[in-house]
Amino acid sequence: MTATTQTVFEAAMALPEQERLLLVERLLDELSPDADALDDDELAAELNRRRRDFELGTADPVTWSQLQAEE
Image (cartoon, rainbow, N blue to C red):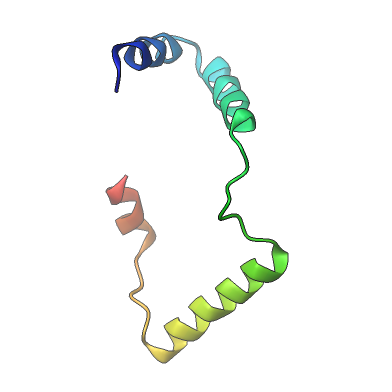
C-alpha cells in the first residue's frame, strides 16, 4: 500500500459508518465491469457444474466459517 493509499484509507476509516458505506458504493460503481462476469446462462451452467461435482464427491467443500477465517 502506497503512502497516498494509506492516507486515503485512514481518512476513510475516520468517517462515520454510513459515509464509509456510501464511499464503498461509489468506488465500486467506478470500477469497470469484470471481464470474468458471467451472464445468467453462464452462471446457471457454472452452478450446475459445481452441484454435479459436489454430488459426485469430486468437489472440495468449504464451510462458511472456513471462508470467513480466510479473510
